[in-house]
Length: 220
Image 1 (tube, rainbow, N blue to C red):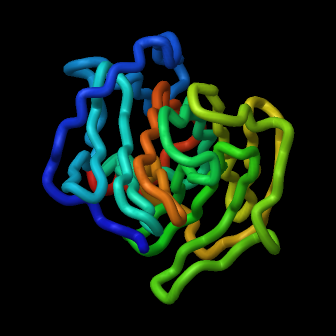
Image 2 (cartoon, helix red, strand yellow):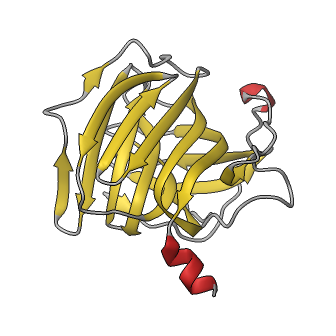
């Protein structure tokens, strides 16, 4: 079940050792280290079932229900061709839980998803209004993923036209060609299967490349 984010409920979890903050690169279209007073326009909300919140200069997603995907969207800017990098780490929860990034979001039900699991598997798929399309037959494993709770993984997507290339910790794991959604928002996500109590942290969200002209036209 894809669940839109509801009223905010702060969850006081500290994870200072997750990673050091990086300086914003000069060529960045967007950078967020979740520093107080400098955080981007993320739609952080939640309820008893799932929560998103900025805690201790990290973005936290907490999911308390089975079979649920929770995401937090950056409302602006919109990107077409870009390189997106983010540090992420599972804090608690079953190893088969998933977490990752959504790109080229046209709406809450239209996007591409790149997600990994704590047991070393990954999936790349597209969600449309009528359901999921996978770009692989099933979840596949890769040694590039640092497995288990407390292990940092860096996810990266390079989007150029209809081509999207996916990396984990600097290792390319897949490339696809699909032109359904040429531009859109980005988001961070986490999801459960049969179990609950999943907590995932995100940090150092960096987007470089070319920002879509749609945003510039709106601003003018």
